[in-house]
Length: 97
Image (cartoon, rainbow, N blue to C red):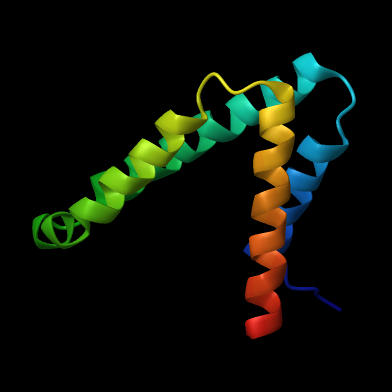
């Protein structure tokens, strides 16, 4: 029997790991790893877009890049707060779906 893995669940579990990490250095490392992975994903998505779609989604792409830039340099407590907010948003989205 195959169980489907949902993206929201993976993201939620990642942010739970950030919140649960007691070592501040490891917590920040997790957060910085998140930034790096999301920058790579965003760059790959942008690279694979047709030119017309790049224009269509440029504002969203720029917004995502700004969001990632705003996360750089966060402390462990700031990462935990951010991760908590993300988990709340995921749960809110699930209850509305």
